[in-house]
Length: 465
Image 1 (cartoon, rainbow, N blue to C red):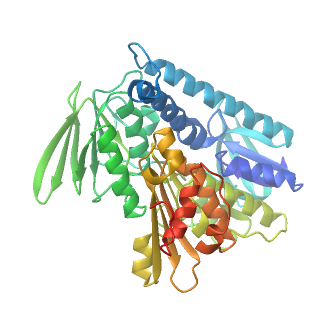
Image 2 (image 1 turned 90 degrees about the horizontal axis):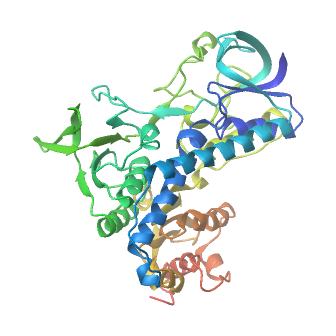
Image 3 (image 1 turned 30 degrees about the vertical axis):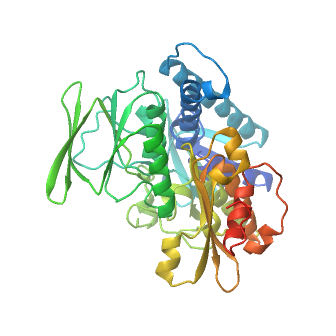
């Protein structure tokens, strides 16, 4: 079969690119290695983790905050099996939705491993081991990523696990060791901490969520210590991981000294790496750069004309919505349009509670670049809506240019931060100043008032602090 566009990978980059291309009149085929569409994000990533985060949050609130709200409960027990069952149902529902969208937009789906025969031909080894080849004028590589595992860690997927296995555990760990206190480690650690696990974070960096503004990491650690009292081992280098049967022993090093940390499970959450195995891209003359596919900055086209790459297999943050934006961009470029994408304004979110969300530059980045800035903070404990709901942890941090007052970065930790950040993204897309936000009426009482007050605080105008 001949198509205008073939896409390898059906995650949030691939399937969104397919739909947009079909809307623009292209004939589209999508090739997916696994039997279900949606990629890591839907099947073993974003969606299932949020499902378990929500379930565990309901349990935590029932056992810790309901009484304060005047809701009396009896003895409660967390049913992890039912939580996983519900999670699987959520995945199936969204799987069905993507399948419907493929049919609606007349996108041909091939289940199997796709590999290049030449720049316009893709061989598909189907799940039943039969083969088929298709041709396409253009190809988008959207094969995503997989967990990074250090070579000395004996991943057995039983006691020493990644987030994939953690999402389907049938028991609640008593003592869970989490190697890595970044996004995945913080989220999955939160799930099991809420259900009663004692968590030990072992992190090579000196703080939680080290890629974000440092204020966010400090505030998240403070909140977790209050709610769950996890153990934190910062600036620790893991040098050995051993499964002794019913126990996992971690050996870590700090300042030349070794420390042993014991638990019944160990979750390895040190990041992800691009997944390009089996694509056979070397025959096209494409050479990987530290595992990633090099692409043109503006069009995301590789050195081979008509071959594009998006999402986790190329440079930049590994975010589902980044991949989706890139998928739309490439589809529109292939259709002859001239879209653009501002990478500085792609938000980042961590779905702990309190949630963490950011867009733009961090305070550390501004200092490094020598940019003069003003800082405004507003704490959630001074926000009427947060006090009423009992979600007083966190703050909004706004960074603005000293000369122009343009907003350069917004960093939020607190209730509904994941939703609040969108206002900051929209404002920054239009190069808003803090004064623009101050002059924009915000409904009371709402969480988003904290963003306005933080903007006021950049000029010492905050009303409620």
